[in-house]
Image (cartoon, rainbow, N blue to C red; front, side, top):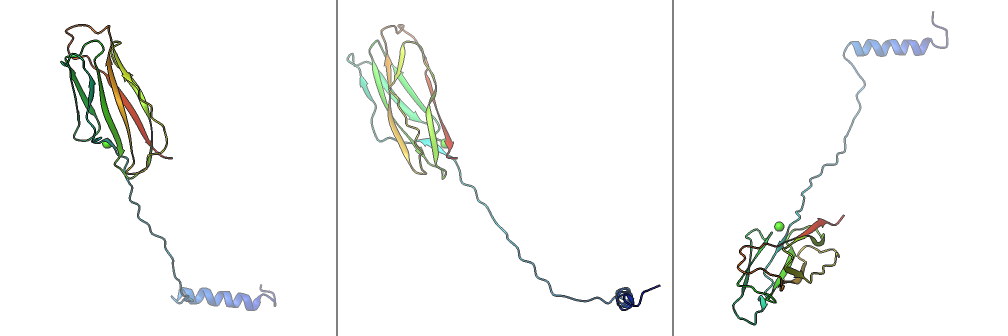
Amino acid sequence: MFSKKSLPISIALILLIALSTLGLAYGFWTETLQINGTVDTGDLDVAFVDPGLAVTEYDPGNVGTCAYTISSDGNSIEVTIAGAYPWYECTVPVKMQNVGSVPVTYSGPVAVSAPAWIGLSPISLSSSPLPAGGSVAFTLNIFVDETAPEGYNDATFHLEFDFEQVH
Ligand SMILES: [Ca+2]
């Protein structure tokens, strides 16, 4: 049975259980605080843009032609050289711009391929961060050396540059 000391507590407990079974309860006020958020992401987008400079040639025979076009998405440049011969040289102005919203670092050219008789130089790019809207310009020198074969069609060369977000 209940001891004398615990008797009032036991009665209170029994009353509480009885009240709650009758559907009565002690009410108390509550409030909840919330944090909500939205996140929009930017974009990493770099592109070749018009450098505002003309192609120059070393063309003593005055028979070579050199031109380039930038693709509509700005992701590639197509250089077309015709009528080249040993010592012919074309210099293409290049401008790469960060047209996205995320600062990038760049490196390159990371991949270069060309026949042995086509020289590509000089290209020196620093790897300092390129902020949104920032650009880097250089000239690509395409040189045809004395081992060039005669009557060759569609010799191709290729260069790649890598960009990655600042992190
Ligand atoms: Ca792009």
